[in-house]
Amino acid sequence: MDHSKQQNASITQAQAEEAVRTLLRWAGEDPTREGLLDTPRRVVEAYGDWFSGYREDPHDYLQRTFEEISCYDEMIVLRNITYESHCEHHMAPIIGKVHVGYLPNGKVVGISKLARVVESYARRFQIQEKMTAQIAACIQDTLTPRGVGVVIEGAHACMTTRGIHKRGVSMVTSKMLGTFREDARTRAEFLQFIEVGTNVIDL
Image (cartoon, rainbow, N blue to C red; front, side, top):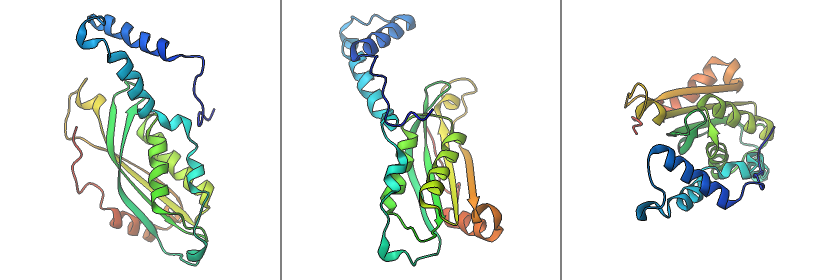
């Protein structure tokens, strides 16, 4: 099911805040002490921001294209789009960069719209592999370009702050569609443009 533009209206703000108090008690804290009195409200408000992507359809951002540059048919690349997301396994932060490229087929979109597509998918519970595929599919389905390439670099707090506790490790995922997948030269040009791994992502 596509959860875009959906909210669980059956869960009230008060119920969500009580769930936070339950977690605080489970952790061994007293949610009634002064320093924690406003914490449930703050957490729920933060969740509303962090997971606002569920209330959006990323495809909507790509509906408006520039007619006056429809003749442009060379590669367009937007690199180093920063993002913050949350791991669906541990609800821990994922912080990193997204690189997007496509070969237009008569439709060119404003670069800020590509960044909004990234934000819309990032502001959900995610795994990096899925988010990579979702961004690529959204661009391919909406703009129908000759090819799309998406590369994501991410540092995962579920790995740096728990479990194996390894800092300075970043994960790289990619999704290539159309010409980016079929033509090695196109793929190489894209990867050269984005220079993956030149900056360390740390949490």
